Length: 353
Image (cartoon, rainbow, N blue to C red; front, side, top):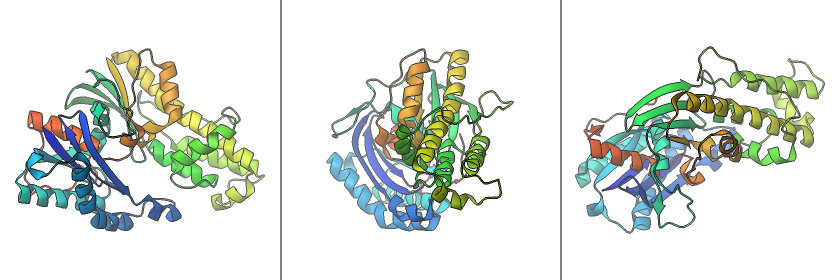
């Protein structure tokens, strides 16, 4: 069964074809990130306009890479939430139109859940992919960490899962963006901090970890504020000093050590909870997904601290992509879940697991 996936939840316009939820036949992604960098974050109107321009060429590219045509496709899977409303609308309306015109079944996919299913892709003839050797075995503990989501989920089987914990405020990727802005590093913050951190001292500054009543929930607002107060103190100013003026007052060594210290603490925060959940539920497999899942620091901390081995998917399948949507769409098709009326399917920007 070959599924065409379509993903437009944020700034990436993506289409991919996956066979049997496992074999990656194509993966086309066009990002509008370069248009957002000057604003320090995603501008929804710009993202939506980029999707309109890119969606058809990207789908055509996916078919070209896979060397397939429409008669070879068994279904269409599309992200209908969560995400930016305008962005989601372009993908869903395109998928609806194609499902009607090409007479293909249409499956509505949860973007956050899709991040976990990137780990089910284990084969591809496409160059440059490093994939897990085998699909994860249930029960699965999934850590989903990105710019918009931080969640810890226990899967007993496909579509049978328990949300153990999630962020109370900022997602971890959002916290990286905000800290990067405080110390004058470019957007997006995760890659910028990862690039700056090796030049710094990971133990230079004692930043706090959140302490919550809920066992598996996360919080990053406290450490983000702690970074702001630290930066103000390092330049000899109090809390009234504007954050926008901090980058020009901090030296490069201070920036690097703030980046290194913050990255260590932020990653430890999610790894601590993951280890705690592993010890309680003893899953057969632990997986990670989402843009932050490509973090070398996160992968190294988990590798060191987990009692079992862990395989990681290729970083290109951690950031937003349609391969994960197609993979999840296959399992939905196999079980007849979320089969949607192409005349009625609507977006759900606030969709959760």
